[in-house]
Image 1 (cartoon, rainbow, N blue to C red):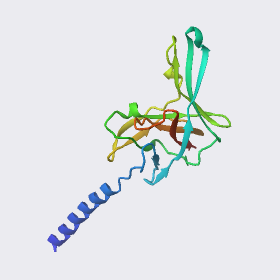
Image 2 (image 1 turned 120 degrees about the vertical axis):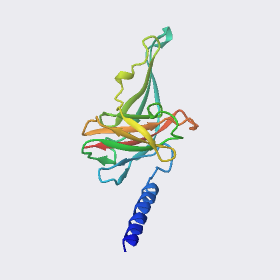
Image 3 (image 1 turned 60 degrees about the vertical axis):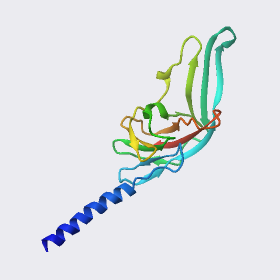
Image 4 (image 1 turned 30 degrees about the vertical axis):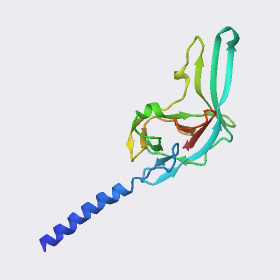
Length: 185
């Protein structure tokens, strides 16, 4: 009797490990993302194909000024909205997960107007870029599955809209990016 109970318990332990491994879900395509909610369910983020608008500011003809790469998404709000209790966990699929995710993934806050906007890459001719002016969120990242990252974000604003961009060297167009969007309440 004791042996059969031990065998049943052992089988339950092994089957739970197998199920956990099979439950590791990665987004199907590079650049896609989802939030892992507090109850471990998943919220798929909206995806937008966005044209990067290049804007020259200043007297570029005499060598002083900045190039600004901006993205603008129509509409004020994402359809993917979440109210986290403490921290935010996002799974993002990348071309691979060999690099530090800080080099590959950008999570940023949109400036809220009638449309969602953000400057994604200011570059100055003499004055240099100003990366501190960007509303990037800091995160802790680790490998997740075969080619994704799990990002944990502890500091974020509520009642705000956010975007996620994955650097994809396989992308054939540098004029467009895929942005996964979500709102935090």
